[in-house]
Image 1 (cartoon, rainbow, N blue to C red):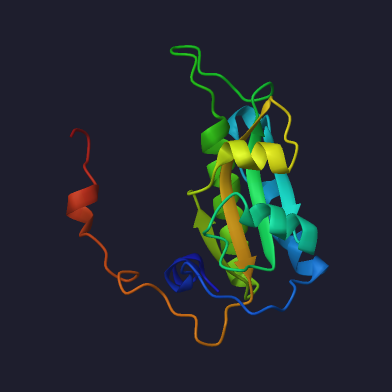
Image 2: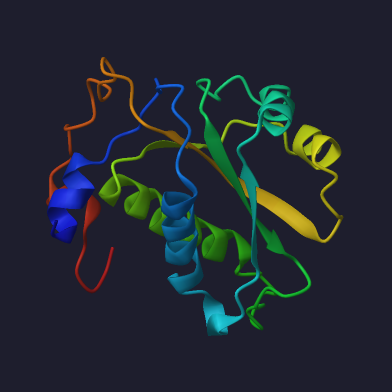
Length: 172
């Protein structure tokens, strides 16, 4: 499907079937992550695939927003590999990880896999439960699976501000 249609049809799925996501589809979602642009193509992102009973139970200790998903990916970045802007020493890792997450979210939609980008998680709990090294920074959690038959978008899903409220040309 074309990009604007894909973007319009994608919504945050908060109710999943128990059906596991096939490895070939996971591989395609991860390929979309690999193709995502990062600053200077440093590719500092690190992705943890969470898709077995033990790991999913660990995930449930770190966020209540897991929606009993059969698959989740934790997107992090390596602080030692992230590009740094010389003007203020800001690292690109959060932006890079966000772009990677967006690519995976859209590829999942293309494959019929629903997702929700979860920002509400306890990073210290994730670091502890999954033994994440100190140089790896958790950024985004993407919970995924086949949408339940009665899954529906949030009522506000199709409410958009007018472009004139969010876009300026040449000055603010």
